[in-house]
Amino acid sequence: MTIMPVELALDEFIQFPVDGITDNSTTDFELFLKISDHCVLYGGSGYKWYRRELTDLLKHGIDQFLVRPEDHARADMYRQLAKLPFVEKNLAPRERIVRIEQIGAEFTKCLYNGEITQACIEKASDLAGSMIDCIAEDPTCIQALTGLADHDYYTYVHSMRVGAYTVAVAIEMGLTDFSRLQEIALGGIMHDIGKKEVPIEVINKVGALTDVEWNQVRSHPSQGARLTESSQLSLVSKEIILHHHEKLDGSGYPDGLQEAGLLTEVQIATLADVFDALTSSRSYQQKRSRYEALDFMRHKMVGDKLADEPYRALVSCLVAE
Image 1 (cartoon, rainbow, N blue to C red):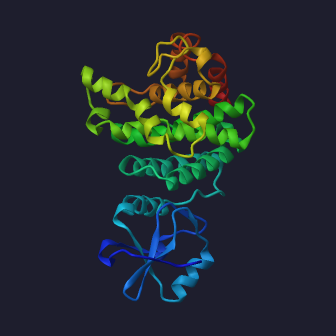
Image 2: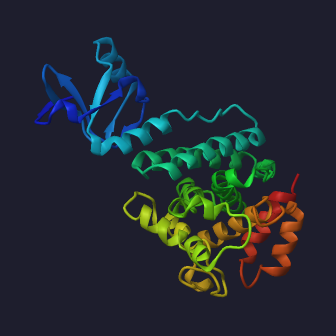
Image 3: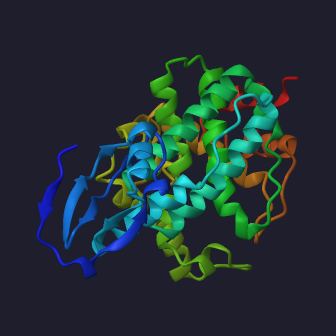
């Protein structure tokens, strides 16, 4: 690694521990070393780390990097994500999918409380991959997602459930390509990220929303698109974020698109979003059983609001034993 001198005052920097960096990860902020009375750049944004290099640094007594204040938010997000546990691959699919939901909820909480960085996208991709592997092994494992959560925590678990339902439906519809499944899963996991721009008291409000509050809620797809515009998410993932509240008859938002303007992946995510909302306790509704939710969707929404083929695929996953 070439170390480059940088002319910056030492008191401008914040410490970052070497052992806070995880093996096989990428830091999306610059890391510096203090050498004598100077500060030098050690690793630029996008630097890939491996355990051997980290071990060598610690062996030579280098246990702290320095981070510029303007990169503190990114460094803090990296540190939060590094603390999240890995998914235990030896668990049975129904146990594993619940564990993915739990870890994913903590990940989503990090997203809502900090900047969306490339480290966030990488962590979401890892979770999406674990989700795909689990559901491909047993598509019926999504039956273990019960919908139990208080309404304050619902915001965090909801996105992971939507991701899981979208993957299960896509696999049931015959999709096997891992990269396409990952795009769908990432869209599901990130679909509500725009809600980080909506006041939490509005999201968790008990009772009817005012017109102003309702407009704030309805802005979240557009806010999500804005927040992820410069990210490395694929077009499919970004379309899910922007258009998961559209309906086949054009009655949705933000653009009032009709069926012809909606990707199949978006239609799948919309169905998954509706199903999880119906089967979860919310501040404004009692939860339905999965059978009550499916019946409601069949008679009130499928055909004009929601697509039929994804609906039938969801039913297959949820009623199969």
